[in-house]
Structure formats: structure tokens, C-alpha cells
Length: 637
Ligand SMILES: [Fe+2]
Image (tube, rainbow, N blue to C red; front, top):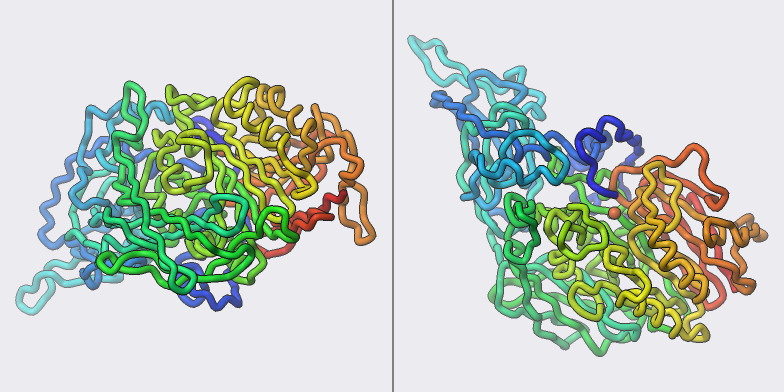
């Protein structure tokens, strides 16, 4: 969905979600496994329940940084241990020597440590396009995350009292303190913690910690897999490192492949007359993105790899599975849209998707169980939206499962859209990334740069993946491609045709989200090519239709012997559309009176599971909190 402007926030509904403690029988030690799951994660998830897309913190960089001269000689902020930081840590930040603890005291994690967090009066208008027209300048560099010191329940009550001066054996000066925990992953650039007074609205700098460095900024991290073709014999592994020298992936007992290295800079971010967040205060150096293709693999087979170099370091050995080759028998896949990420501590950050952690954990457990061949994330990937450090946190979140099976993506508005950048929609939803960050982190088998459409075949399914953010009108390059792609499918080899993109054709979401021009241009292609299943996101809930064309049900599913809705495509009349944007972003409500074509509506965090054989597609909606299947249907032929 588009960014909400602050005036809309008042009517933004607050969703109530039940997030349960995670459980797993997995032996794979992921950052999310219960054995090392920090207790703050659960609290943090609950904290995010009331999150309404734009927090006061997010508006921070439109606030004037006031002078707050503080003559308190005892004030300190430091980090326990104060040594080089590992690849993932929960840092303890201590604020001590406070004379009068205030509710408005807060701590920001800043990176790099030399970033300017003072007043930037000339940046005043930069953020106006996000909808906030406050007449306030920007903080020059955006914090990675922040917390009020009062998150420590002992802070305001001064339970951590210290005596600073004695006279005649009596304490004459006492001060207070607070302790905060920050979840940090290796973002390569050094960090510092800054204590502010004045809340998020009128911040002023009180004290800065020493700068802290990562023990190994070159550490190869966040590996994730994708397919490059439909053979199941080659897989691309993409990872991040602070090292620009080529590294390699070593796999399948003795094979290796050297990485191609890419990156992007502030100059690659797009902007209009005024700099975008990505180009300006949201910029963070992405390091280097390494990518290598493992070849000579066998389809539907488990193997292992590690990536890195002797000088930069190596990843752990990762077990992975190749997808089935196109035309083979069975495929088990997961699909979802609009996941994003959420902090694994008590912090606020620029953009939080409250369901993302529980959904990622549930999918990770599914992958661990060996029941997943491939994953499709159909747009609105990380919601970094111009605050680039958030890509690292997102990659960290998905790495436990995206490193083990093919993780295929489609582009969404929050990766691509920006006025004047060539996107179909002129909203500033990508924050100035304009697809550059997405395309670098998630190289897909696409025809060329900024042409993010492709198809891939796995077992009995042909997946046609389009970009709803690029021109899809008749005679456009993408239209011609999708028409040709779907027409060329050999249905004796891949009997099932699944069409995927980001923005929907049908939704009963109360906020709408359908572009009638898109339906007018593309819907008939779906019918002409007998598309079986259409998956879209963008709207943040789950919804399944009848067989639908031009807003009319052309057929209804019939209950099979076990009561499961079954669509008979031996007598094909139109595709089934399913909205699967329920993977993380604050959920959307439904209209009170949905149309006849809407059969099932669920507004809970979860994901979509598919099981394909040549005879049948079995499809499920899984509630991530309870792990229960809350909708199941079949398509047969
Ligand atoms: Fe979207």
C-alpha cells in the first residue's frame, strides 16, 4: 500500500494480532531459533501491535535540533563490553549520571559514527513529498533505531541511584541511570549511541558514546538463493560483504565459483528537484553485493555450500535444496507479499512491519521441515524505502530460510516507485531507491536492468512473474513479453499456469487498491491463456475469489468429499485470484459488503502454501501465529 500521510493516520485502524511464542523442532540454528531467541523479541512484537506505519520517530528528521547545553559533568553513555561487535549482538547501553531523569530522554543508534545528527536547516523541504508538511528541518542523518530511556522501568524512579560526590562522609550529589538493549547486526560501518533530550519531536544532543566497530566488517553475510532457469541444476547465491575483492562459493563437495561484485552509491538513487531519503538522510553504504551461480547441481536434491574468502572470512556451511526441474512431478512452494521486517528489540525504527517476525519464523520452520522447494515474495520486500540500512536487517531476517531454498521475488511499489523515474505510479513509495537496491540484492532471471519480469518453471507449474510498477499497457514491452510467455507454455509439460505480480485486480480491502486500467489491459490475457491461479499482494490481507472475469463469477468451486473447495479446470472458465499481502505489514480491513466474487477473507498474519502435482494444485493459507491452515482449496483438471 502507499505511504500514509499523517492526516490519514487518525483513521488508520489498529489491528489486533495474536503473536505466540515461537516453537520449533528444528536442528538448524538460525538467528530466529528458540535457543537463541532474545526475550525482547516477544515484547517487541507486542510493542508493534499498535504500530500505525508512521511513528513519531519516523518524523524525526523534520525536527529542528535544538541546543541543549548540559553542564552536568557526570552524564555518560557507554556500551557494556565496549569491544568490537560480532555479526549479531544484543548490546547493553548504559546511561548514567543523569540528574533528573525525563520521559523525553532517548537514545539513538547512529551509523556511521561520524554522521551529522545536528541541525540541517536547508533540508527543510526534503521530506514534504512523504506527506508531512511540518515547517521543520531535517536531522542530517537518520538513526538506525531508537529507544526512550524510560523503557528501563528503573529509570524514571531512579532505582539505579549513584552517589557522585561526598562531603564529610555524606552523599551530596546523587544521579540516576538507565539500561537499554539494542539488537545489532553487522552493518559494516561503525556505530555510536547518542543520548537526546526533548523526545522525538524536539530532540537535542546531550551526550555521545564512543564509536564502536564491527569485529569483521568484511564478513560475508545474508546469503540467499534464487533460480536462474527452469532446470533445477543451477542456483544463484547472493550475499553481502564489506569486501570489494571477488570471493567464492564452495559447494557440492569440491566445486567452486568466483563471485561477481556489485554495489550502488548515493548517485544511483533517484531524486527530483529535492533529494530523496535514499539520496540524502536515509543513505547507508550497502558494502558490496556478491553473487555467484552454482552449476552442475541435480534438481530436487540437497547439498551444501559456504561462501567468502580466506581474507574476508567464510560463512557457515549451509544445507540447501535445489528446486524441481520444469516438467517433473512435484513442487511445494510458499508465496506471500508485503513482509518487511521489525526490530528484534524494543526499538522503533523508520518503518516497522509488525507481522514479519512471526511469519518469517513460521516459514523458516516449514523450510527446516524439508517441505519447501521454493519461495516467492511478490513485492514490497524490505520496506527500507530509502533508509538503506534496513535492507541489512531484512536480509538478516530472511537468511535462515532464503539461504536454503530458491527465494524468488517480484518488484513492488515500495521498491520501485518515485515521481519522474519511469514507474507507472508516481508516488514516492520507494523513498528514492527506484528499484536499484532491490535489483542488486535480488538478481532475478530478467531480460535487462529495470525490466523486472520473468518466468520460471518448477515441476508442473509455469510461473509468470510481472512488474505492476512498469508499463503493462497494450503494446508495452512488458505486455508483449507476458503475452508471448504465456502463449508459449507447453501445458503437457507444465499443466499449471500461475500468474504473479504485486498490485491486485480484485480486492475487498477497505482501502481499495485496484487500478481499473490494469484490469482493462491485462485481464483478458489471463483468460486467453487459461491462467489457473493469480497471486497478488499490496493489500494486506488474504482473500480468495471464485473463478472470476470482469467482476463476474464464471464458475464456483465445488466441495470435494472432504469438504474442500475444488475448482474444476478441465472445464476452465476463468482464473482464481488470491491476495496474499498478509505477511507482515499492518493488516487491512475488508469492506462490510464485499462483491459476490469474494469467497474467503482473512485478515491475519500468515503465508500461502502450494503443493503441485500434474493432476492437482492444492493451496493453503497458513496462520503464522497458530500454524493452522485456515483456508484450503484445490484446482484440478
Ligand atoms: Fe504495495
